[in-house]
Length: 343
Image (cartoon, rainbow, N blue to C red):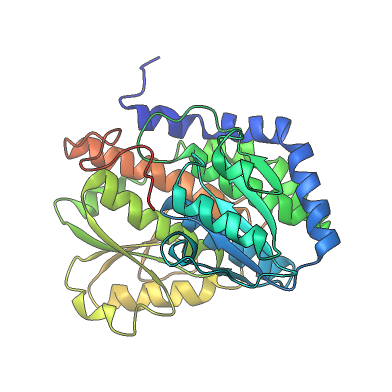
């Protein structure tokens, strides 16, 4: 068997195993945090994160609002770390997402949230981290060591861990079953090759990534991965926003990746994808509801909220191949470090 060409590729292929490890070992943490959420019954939540972790928080925002009707707002860590302000978060919950759990601004904001009356939950791959120490509950991601600078399996496990906690809080049996079946679905997803989309990108250095609802978070993560691993200028938009100005830069052959789950937003996103195709863009969409855009193969899971997790696994496989084809080492992107500690 041929060894993976890059560490990133190896870690992408480990995603199903990492998720299974989380499911096997994370239950006590998840159920404890969910019970605390049930006791507090927050009327709103805040999230604290940066980079890929912030995209995970965006996904959990949509999941919470769709499942529980409880809104989540992202708060800027600098409010605590730079400006030294205290927010009134009595009766709220705070979700902090950080793979390393070491970034000073994330830690300080989480400390402030707890002091302000919030139930604080840390999601981290390092349960002995400073972030875990200042939080009421810690969800260990159980992703295992991640060496490549580009986060892949830690991002996916952040999604699964947070969604699992929300599903336990909601006592949603169908979603809980879908989460347990994810490893097999992800095994299929990481093997998908979006070769036609890779070819369409060719030597172009700009593209749009689109999403709507929970899949919008995956669009954000996709754009980041194109930038950091492929040195391609990618911008993420909600399909509800892209026609309000950004569409002006679309020309003949402009590449667009449109990510959608099998949910209520699918038809709306498909319509925008077809509209962009009519304007000359080369649009690839993860839905069969399009007529002018090209259909990407995708793995559907057993629940609309778990569909986006399979989509990002396939997207990761694509960007790693693009980086390799351009002679770029995705394991060590220029100017980047594995752990970024901001104040």
